[in-house]
Image 1 (tube, rainbow, N blue to C red):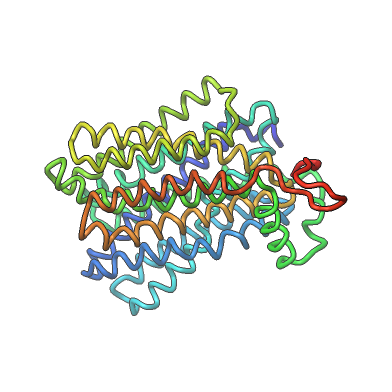
Image 2: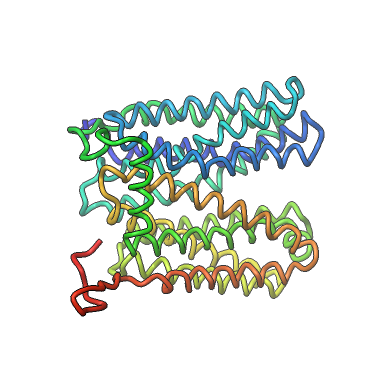
Length: 404
């Protein structure tokens, strides 16, 4: 099956699914405003489909780990996600809004399938010696999707109307279905995956994330970093208005960050460096902290440089995070660890955006300074978790064990 399923298929499917996902959020907000006539309803739709991912990710990951054909389960999740988007669109203006929000929440449970669930299958497509390059290319699909998705949503909504933007996002997700279905089946039963309950698998996955120090450090650092990224996103409209002369121009800032992240990951894919992914994770957070501090200066050139720096930090950090997860995750828990990590990051991003909103209204430089402080906190969190667990017993402390 590996001969039939190549890295190109993986990247094509991931790109289509993630572009549809990135497009769906702005498209739902535009459709909610157009059909429900309320900015509150529009933002509630986005919150509903985003925050529920924190619950759905771990369970979805366990099911992927237990599936003999994870590709069929992944394809099923994509079908249900696309169907949920369609039901939201049909229900707006026709069903009570509380029912539409419930559909959005249920749909959001499957969101991690488009991110971590897909990436978790990569080691069964690529040999270990080619995995670093594949990680960088896979991370690039996130950057491309974050660049193309919102732009497509705005363009389609402008030309064909907001509901059409939701339809196009559904079509993009549907394009990923054949690639998901072709993901190779497991060559044999996975150790411990089906002989225990789902609850036991969930507990085992959480123990691995918390117990394997490199994985715990990478997870905590990336989640706190996403809080800072969410805060920056909340600042973008006001940055566009005050620094660039128009709130709509704030979208250019996100595009600049996405482009620089893509370029950074392209360089990593072309010239894999000898620096460990663990080091890249904490260095990239400090780069983002410096970028946020520079953005607070409030000058156009400095702002553009700042968002380019932020992208240079975000792109390699994501590729390095994938590398750490692939290295540390046991085969029978890999899907859960990837989807749980994706869920935590999504939640962190949403939390950062929510916290920054009131702060931005009072002080834009203050919000950016707070975001920079959170990024520094992410780097400190990395070093707060010791890399080698202390061994207490037999009169010895701090002795190196057999590794995670």
